[in-house]
Length: 282
Image (tube, rainbow, N blue to C red; front, side):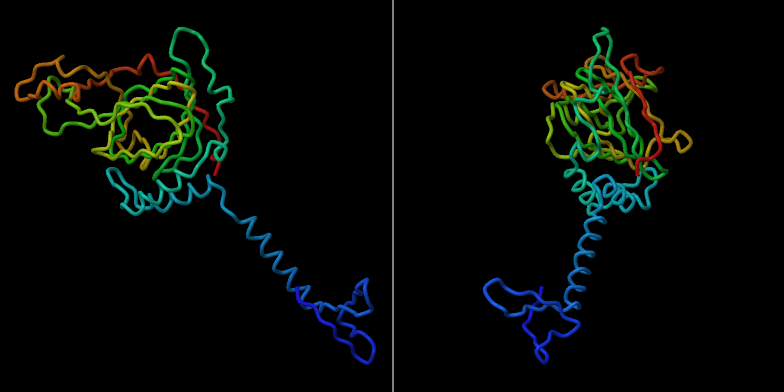
């Protein structure tokens, strides 16, 4: 803050305040104009701090841009995909209010698959945001994401993911069974990169098995919608050797990379899901 030593006829001007150093009688003066300017700067700095966007709000605003023109089968531009991925890569468990100590992540010894909890954050016709909370051994069975682009961020824990893509134009053994190629079959431990799957590739069909308590932040664009024809379908997966179909031939060394996926008629027995749908948190 600027200071001076101005004296007017032996008196300090009325618009100046004085201060005397202990080692002398030299009046140190500061103008009220400078002090007012300093106060304004502090107010602006305080206001700027208050307007810093929290991570969840930043994620929401980014999704609004990325999925602005989102329709079934629409894939965001590479620039938008990278923008959203960068935001998700920075999000930490505490940013979205989850911790391994929460009751959602405690597995009860019942001899059955433990309950998986879905924490709703936001949903509109263009995208949805939510968190899957899986206790150890929690399962999300093999399912699809029709006409959707999906971003998944593992917030904490270790999870096994197996995913498939359909083999296009392949003969089918039945109307409800199709050939698929394995895309991913690995364990992932946080922190790790955000994964992305697309309407026709990237592992559009996948299943999760929690090796430890873990949380997965999911962004879907567009979200599931029965009226729009985006139904969630669950599948059984069978080894390639389970069916012999004319016109389908895979080298012996590659057969483990393929499977036959058969639609489940009923909701999977190993799907134990609790939906915590509250008012949007954004």
